[in-house]
Length: 169
Image (cartoon, rainbow, N blue to C red):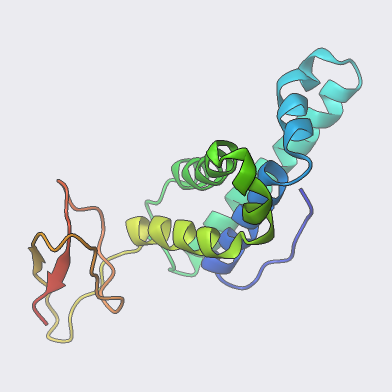
């Protein structure tokens, strides 16, 4: 993975990280990256270098989440491990299960998927904001067949399957 400077926001940094994952696993280097991940430990000299690189990447990714927590962009109890596993695993699996005849298109156009993935994950870890009246908004769940949400009032995880969301304020 190439290194990058902080974009100044957790969202921007996660978009960059997920884009890198898609570039690796949807692009020309996909098979090489998979084989390296599987076989590096068995190759003397490569094993140590690969492990050091993997450790540095993991520490850098965790630092991204910690900066987001310090800036108040996500809840203080956000698990960096779960957030990063979901982000990188989601990006990697999306690339790997994309049909071969569509992979080149995915490699050229990663932005739309990455944006949707990052926004989905951030909604799960963004603290709910109190309403203007100083109270938490009431969540109304209804079956519309589409998701609707109020960006001014991001919600935490809601138990059960929701097909739509509406706030009372």
